[in-house]
Amino acid sequence: MDIRDVASHGDLNGKSIKERIEAKGKFIKIRLKSLNKGINKEKIEALFIEFVVNRKGIKVSGKVEEGWAYITLSNLKNSFLDAGKVVNEIKKNLSILQYPLEKNVQIFPDGKQPHNELKELFEQKDYQKIHNTINWFVKEIVNSLNEN
Image (cartoon, rainbow, N blue to C red):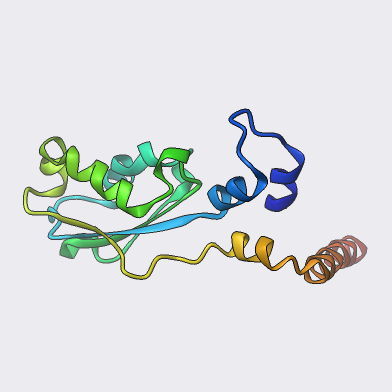
């Protein structure tokens, strides 16, 4: 559906379908270490809201109470499609953010960035797989309606 949405709706900034697929399916992962022990996941989410289109694009995992976390960002704003850019932006504002995070916090892109599965599917051009997936989905919906 994401590929269909990108293909069906134009882009006011003139981006190609390939560029829009890259942006739509992109996830980046950031790691925080030596966090303030009093911080919680909601406060971390609030710090990363500027990088995503909406709060649903932020997932915080790890042991925040022990001082470390992974932040996975999706549905990124166009200017922050790179983990390095997000890290640099946070580091630039560290003097403001050191109270909620901790003055000795370490922020860096995770070494294993998530794959962009949407981009890979688009580049493979395996239309038979897409066709089969849609057929399966329609059958499941019909079956669930018939059961009710």
